[in-house]
Length: 136
Image (cartoon, rainbow, N blue to C red):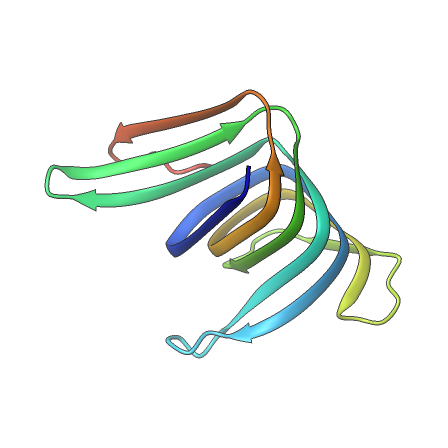
């Protein structure tokens, strides 16, 4: 399936994210004056993936959550990250901002946008619950 999410920041966590043939781009955040990182990769794998989005409704807050306990493979990946509190490991660097592989362990971030040309997952679970139940 093809996936694209954008809009209000959503929470994304993963035990590990590996992106291959990566280019990192700094993008200025016009509203805050800070910077975001955009990672563009030919392909990637995410283990222990969880994505959650908090939605305000007249009936109260709802959380939409997607989890996958098996590794998720993706191609043509573009992800915009902000509020990153994890360490990035770049390997096989030719000349920055490109790298052979970007590996992130214990990913805990807010993301503004993510897209993948092909998003392959098995055993995924989608839930909608009342209240605040962000990925942790």
